[in-house]
Length: 396
Length: 229
Image (cartoon, rainbow over all chains, first blue to last red; front, side, top):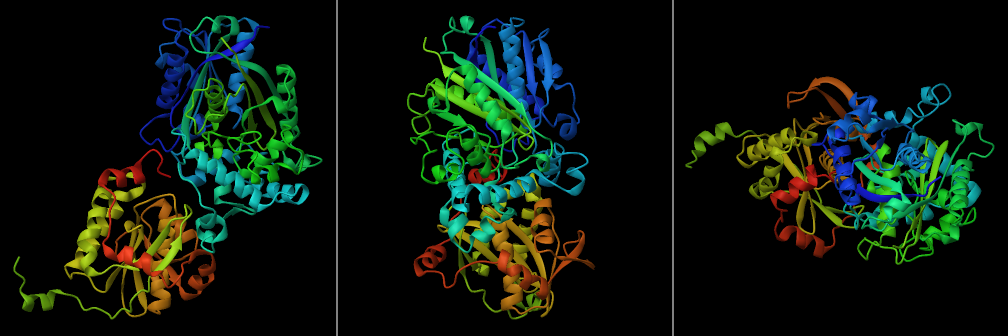
């Protein structure tokens, strides 16, 4: 197997992109990544495209086939990858395996979603289609509803408080104001969303005990990377970022079937695999992008990947250990919470942000000083299909 | 333009007496303090400057809502509507939202529109709540008739309160009215109506000094830009 590196990364600003079609967003992000890779006349051998809702929201299928034609990448191989909110990381994994195996040299991986084309209710329903079609969905469960129940239990078992959730929310929205790609560029104020009696309107309960600002926004957006064998990458001008390790694990479809619904086994296993393959441990990671669709998930994942012991993640967030300059900066991009969560794009966007961190390309107010290793966790379903990547800076 | 006051006496509708709406201050999610106060008729030309750029924004039905607000406020300014009032929200003196309505009679209110000029801070929710507070607590009305012209409005008013569906036509000419009763209002009040009184003097002075406006491009970007939430 060959070592595989990321040589190009691109993203379009997330938000509400009424003027763009899904295909335009995917094409824009792809072109940015291809330009960044500096391949010149060299085309790519294959395209892996991550998307969850094109069929349901845009009534469009075979999206990857459409994209390669639009980008004049014919006759490159093209596949659309659908794995719920983990589609982005799944597409990267497919690209990684294809290059590592030697079948392809240059691969474009792009993820995108256009979710603001429908009302919030329809978007929530669309995301809820990933729940169990007999045991969950018919009873009206939504992902926020599931996250609310998970949070309540996690609070009871692992000593997480609303103060801890608030710390994540304040941190990620503050970082979002520094990220031009973030959907939400608005810092929150503790008084306005928590302390003041007016917070009951500003930050209402969404799915008890989660409040409005514990949830990520519904966003449009796209992100892309270009990968190739490390040996070829070293000949290019950009510093390559090695995909040092990846892991993927699954868990039961329904939460109720798990021995302990607060135990995110797939997160633990995916992260362990990624660390083992990278020959690194959690303490070697300098920056992480964790899947904070709900604030509780950043805390829970920070414990399950091994940054903190169970019961310590919330306290660590409240103590500032996960802020820029802290023990392990998490979601310096603003995370899903502020950058947004166009589901098919998220897993790719997380990797793009870590690539920028490891290339030391970000402005000082967002750059983790001298970052060498990064981690991403892309969380599918409610933890029933999780992928993790360990990325490593390669010195030229 | 010359005004024939003899003819005006015929053209101008009668006005029900309306008590003043006491101003209040609300802390927003970003920590800014929004002063909610009643607009005077003399404020209308200035307010219309902020409404004007919204006339050309299709997103979320801003165009139709703004066009109607423009007409309603102009009608109030030119004495062509019965018993209209306007409340507004100001942050650092800047106008961030407008709500208006009128009295159908002494016991029934007619809600007109809610126009949030800054977004993502629940300004519309706060101002709509202030409007209902005015009808129920200061004008002591029995009910307010309401319609929504956007899905966001429908979610905010009809579902969040929740309002009662009726077959009563609304004078805006759209769908049938929904009704806020005193019972519905006072049940919803603890979770939807907030604000502190009295407003600290320095905040009130800033709001009263003059109504500040963001420029047209800023208003359009806030409402219809990529980051518009």
